Image (tube, rainbow, N blue to C red; front, side):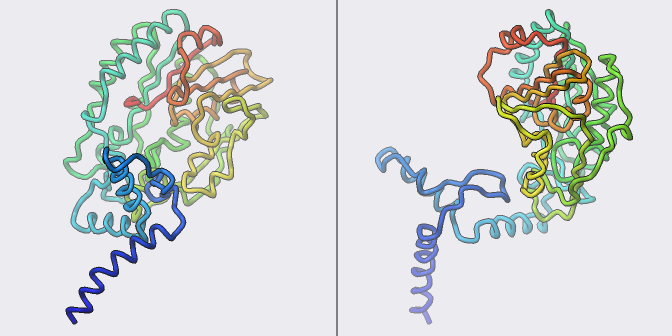
Length: 347
């Protein structure tokens, strides 16, 4: 019996390690929404320790049944009473809300960016629309005692650096739980519509009614970025899209579909909006108002811009995370009639 146990103790790990090298590599974990270390990425040498580190990451990432074990570990943590797993709060009704604390906000970087925008706002008409995170708007939905960053203090600090811009406060606008997804950190189509209406009121743009956009549901089984952190949640969301006029759309110079319906067959269904994030997206509308709008954005703008697609003759969306431009020079070259900064306040 002892001999059998000893053989298993030696043989089983050897078989598992062998399986890692025999089986094809998985380059992506859809469950965790991240890239995995593959054998081609093992580099360095033994002397500097890089090889050992790469090998350890490779063995961990490619371990057989790895995603099953990750899911089991997450579920056991929930059964043990944890209500914050992987950066997601698990609310009493099963809603998932991203955990964001003061320690996760970089006030210095945010104020430096606000200063840059304010210098541009001295020469152009600029609106700034900070999106409050779901953990702020839905504080009453959170587990008891869950820490949350101080949105109002951060908002007031940034507002003091934006003397030349017009700031649109969305805190009261987005207070309804029905404006955010239950499994994803973004607002849903109805939250995006409320932000659109707030922008129209501030900019003097005529706003359409929800009915005029003929919003239709295209998916009833959306599970977003937060579900990947707590994949046992029974909550699901709907993806709904507004009807848009005949428009032209390019992303980084190549033509794309405004709605990428193929994304509904993938894990990240939110990419139905323009196929995800791009450095530059240009939307042209021959029947627009003759004006150009520049949107400096993060992914919240992807589901917001459909509501404006029929209004402006040209909308240019720039996601600076995917570009290396000089913002001031780019703005001067484009010379837009209006600029909208639309980002989650922590970005």
